[in-house]
Image 1 (cartoon, rainbow, N blue to C red):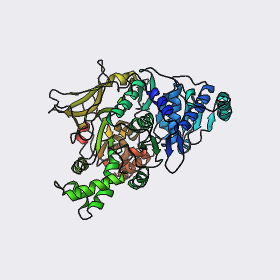
Image 2: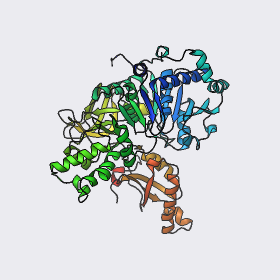
Image 3: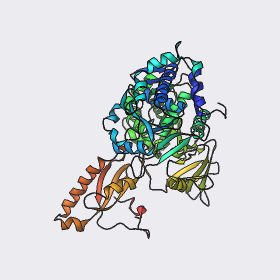
Image 4: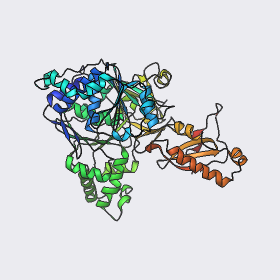
Length: 553
């Protein structure tokens, strides 16, 4: 890959080079070869052109991972449109907001997402299409309707002797051109659209090549949501650029599904969140190695060679026994599991990043990786610790380079808060850095919470909803044992004035919790309410002193 090549050149060249190879497969479903993808893109472009879509217009996509999701994404970016991927777990009002805020002209949705949407809440759209079969669900444009219904006929006239490699000539954006807007959060008041330019996506794909080259035909399993930049870049865009055969599980990647599908697929590249690896080690590997002591193996300082070999063999087999390393990112990794993997010489790698860097900030090859660290600065990135003594005193991780976003869409104030005048992006994470450049994350200096599935959770968003509920004076959302807990200071005066007793107030808080969860995505559900009997301590600016309440039991 040449430095001057852009992200779209990767896509175009891969299609041409791998024309007859398998490209995209829905597990237990159909397979598209690279030439099939090219032809679907050509038909997609016919529809976009007929609907009056211009380079730079926004196209949103929201649905479960699938071959057609990938085709939608590729069709949009190769046309010159800006793609807006939306996590399918988001509630309807969040999806409506993102579609409107991004000014998307078209929306493509999976049928399960579509059931809960209201087209009247998205007035700027020219149309809504179904990812499953590329039919039009809503059309507000006659040309869009006609082109969708007659795309095969138009395609046949344009390419009477069939569509071939030489017909491909995709839109080539400049390095600074916007190509993706990825929303970091799904709640209306706090959604921020991360603007990722071509250079950022290109640099991340190039880094994947440098770290672990894939060969054409290698299998890649896409487990992470494509709407999340980690899965979008590491699995999908890198895999497709390399001529790999991408498999979409189209379902939740439970240990059972992984064991079943990976033995068949035998993936060369695997990337996932820590929770998946942790579950597999605890549920599938340790019991097979030694039923008597099971999880105790995680804490045993010395493991004999036979147990080590048996554990490594079991772990390798569950993941298909054909991979070079497993890339783990998106959330903190359990220290006991990491120590165990190091002991058995299991090939894992940690990636640290954020959506704003599409996503890579730090990583290292697994044989070099310092335990407990997230590696060193990625190629084309500078990383510093804002601390007087970065080796000893934790400071905020700041970074700059090719991977960094342009800014937040239509939010200059938030952009200026995170990227300073010298181009350094302030991550909000606290870390130390040793003399060799290995970065070890120590904690978070922002309020951002991260669950074990790698989802960003902004407590203020949940609190703003909760504080509007019956008899709630103020609240704090904290993470305990990877679960969200609501600390609530009720408005006792109001409640007692309405004839409630303390037991009634507690019942009302539980009712509030159930109602609150109906408004939140699955990954940010609140599992418990704890009553606080006095007002929370506050700063001079009347902000709650969060640090005082993180460890309340």
